[in-house]
Image 1 (cartoon, rainbow, N blue to C red):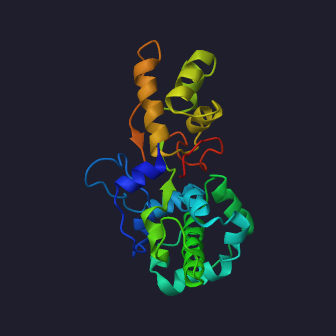
Image 2: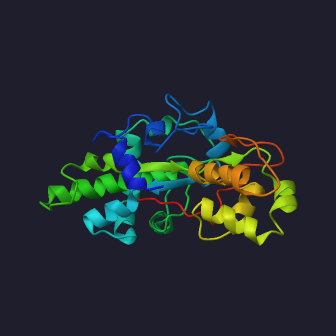
Image 3: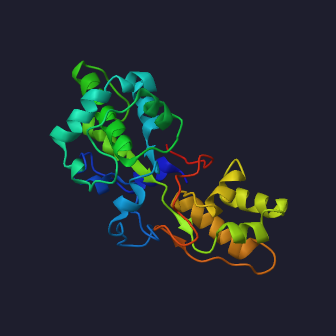
Length: 256
């Protein structure tokens, strides 16, 4: 996935999203690319308890402002308060995480390194970017692609990594893939991953982005020998503990 090309194609407005769901790069649905797709009901309780969200556009922001993760982290307390004062994002149902807790400096490093976070932490980091842009513009700085602080919302979003594949569980993996290095390599290449481990983790209950799940399903159905097939890509957790663990630590996700 080319994140920046995709989000530019969405033609987002330079406006801070009013609703927390509008921060999402695409909805948490079985097929988020389908016209009219929207998040399924109560996704917050299924996914809000795990670090399953990337900060899309954070690398673009750092390039545009020449700020690093440590500089952005200097806005962390102010950003937590700004979310409460300036937005309705905290209307998100309680999912064992909250909007008032402190965010650690290390989480800004995790966002820069394209690692998944809790939804609330990803949102606070985006707010920190808005505050940083606001301050820099007020001081007279000229920023690339940013003429007003809310311009960041044309490029920044939260990328969900909440998907699993029906029937692609540990039994299927052990039977058809675990001992077949060629099959592992086929799936790795198809999903544009740097390590095969993400495929094993997906089968053992971890989640991935929609793009990765869709590519793995398609490759299983079309590229593996023996006419093996799995079920549909699914946004909700399923049977056999599928989709119940945190996002795979090994997934490569283009975060712009």
